[in-house]
Amino acid sequence: MAVLALATTVEAQTSPASNESSTAKAARQYTECMALARSNPEKAIGVAAAWERAGGEEGARHCSAVALLNTGAYEEAARRLESLSATTRRPGKALKAELLAQAGQAWLIAGKTNEALSAQTRALDLAGPRIELLIDRAITRASIGEYWDAIDDLNRAVDQDSSRVDALVFRATAWRKLKNLDLARDDIARAVGLAPDNVDALLERGNISLLRGDTAAAAADWQRIILLDSKSGAAEAARENLAKQETSSKAQ
Image 1 (cartoon, one colour):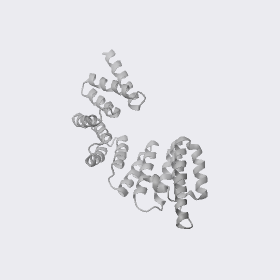
Image 2: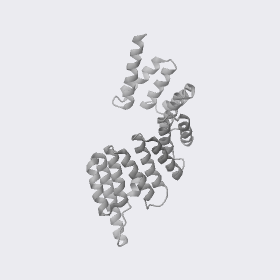
Image 3: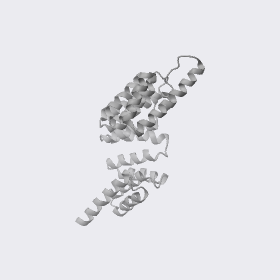
Image 4: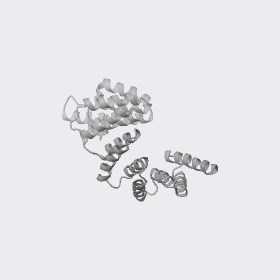
């Protein structure tokens, strides 16, 4: 994992015993800085900068990037994550790919889909067809209407793990967007079968049911979402769908 790898980048300058102590200290500082990046990102930026000046190097730089991400400075966070991926001294490709994946997510949140696709594709080139990376790139591709390309990535993800509910839900959505309701129904049936209370799966099944003309089934799924998790994004979308359905019913 990137967290563990970056936590050990501060090199000791003395004996093996000192090296072990330095590594433990770096890991502790990294853990504390990352926790602060989540709870108080503005403060974490200053802490990370001070740590980097004191020799924190890659751990400090990663903490700073995550803190920036959590303040809403998505583009700057993405640039720093890409820079860290390009310059890290850690061996192997896994860490570089993970940092590029994080950069891709930051670029997508910032609305920079070309940059997101570039980072995600480079991550896949480094790490191979890892499921999380494939799903990330599929989401980016779907966000700009490249549904066939998104399905290609999701096919590869599902081929590796047929129990990935999120991949099945995303693929069902892509099929729905392409107006292939039969394949959309098949995927969402598999997803709900694996996770009957997954609110995202239920939301998509309701969307597909509506397009297939089964308004009662759609409403039942959306109402169930609200009962299961009333504060979720899926519940918010379900309420909007129910309101539209009610308005449409009154207009008829």
